[in-house]
Length: 182
Image (cartoon, rainbow, N blue to C red):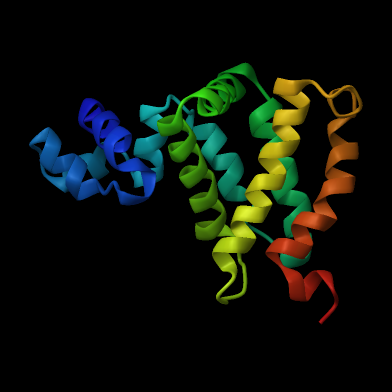
């Protein structure tokens, strides 16, 4: 199943890959894929060797009151991308690979954006995808600047300082009515 999923994600990307397509490629029933991998996100995480705990960090960021969404999302991203090596190293490898490999780039982009779209309690509007993309770009940019490029003032900043400064912007993007007091 993992070989079929790797191939399917490589050819179709994250968005166009379905559990049914992976099951057909692996010559198993879709229910078997779901038995081993609870969702397409979990299947992708297994293919990319992203531990379930990192996915849980992202998912739990969207639990709780909307007025603190920005803070939770920024903290979850920093915790996952800069946290324990077993979580952060696969994510950083995927990020580094996406810089030089278009397939990895597309898969990472679709994966990150889908997590924000799926979980962000963003108001139903035409610009939900754009908002998720902007939040994704900002968060990946912060991680890239801190961990790959090593911009000194960002790399040396405490995570809580980054959360304090970036969370209001993410809040304004993902939950605009709450952030502006409407």
